[in-house]
Image (tube, rainbow, N blue to C red; front, top):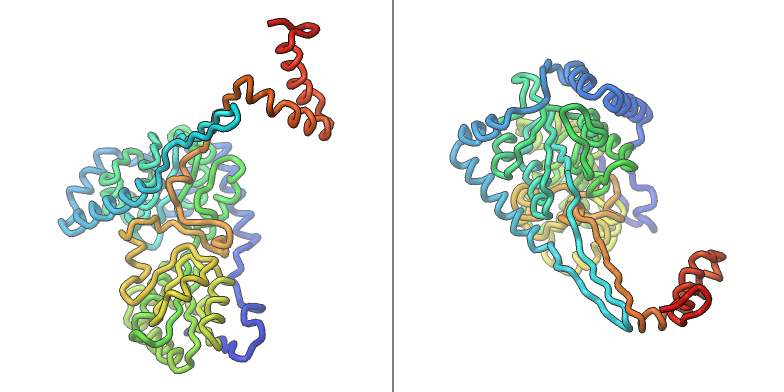
Length: 436
């Protein structure tokens, strides 16, 4: 089920590592058509696309606000308590990310740097293959902590019921979100980016999705902020040395694979015997899994078992893949943690499966995928904040800086910039055209 790559004795084990092919021209063309349709036709296009692509006929995409509270009341007590716990932990973690204004003053120049939230955020929550109340909390709560007043959530409707899964609506109620729309896919991204009659345009779009959703976000990135880089199909790399049961590594390879066929799931080790044990455990656990079809589809397409010579080589493979999730199930994780360069989130030790991060560790589970962890990070409050600075220069500070500004402006051939300095100096000195 896992494709085995034996890279022992290979001088450069990362040179020819396989990567999923994301740039599907057919998907790109279809997404561009959807975006243009929604941009031009608004709600009419949303309803038509929802009927055609999701098989759901709607009179309106808006979920009545009272349905959110009703959904929360309908949840079993353990689910309500889990949603509350998750929201509390996510909120507490992101509150720690808020920074006070910073004041810097030197040589007559006073600078105050501070942040302001964007006005409106759109959260995309997947819903095609399963309900994801956790994603609603992991996107909406950080936006609210950042101070965003206006948050909208878009979720694909269930093909059977024609509405959003009640547990996802319950999460919206727990988060304090009142605007939820039953619309998914690229059309939801288009609606949030361009606006329709019923969905006002947003300033930032966030949330994971399939290849169509991720492609749509890249296409509208010139119009809205797109948080957490390329938050697409799920990925995991598990590194283990046999110090823990093989089933631990195997189930953690599987847990991301069950999201569906477009992600990737890798296991890396420097022990061939451990590789055999984990491979067998993956087969056994997959055969017993309720979502076996999704797991098999992912592992068949992009599931790899990699055997290398050393722990350092294993980390080189992980850094080359730059996975969304990286798990280190090794006896001495410290040295390997120090080698991590590219990963959305790192989970250390046998009791830290990525599933805890997916639900309620605290940091958002919206993470960079498709190798974008090389330059991007998890969703944080900063994705919803704009940094401002206010500069105030007094007379003495102006006198100190003026000659250098004039020299640089003249060197760049920007005479008006230089003149903005010369004019002020003449006026201060009471020269021609000047005076006090």
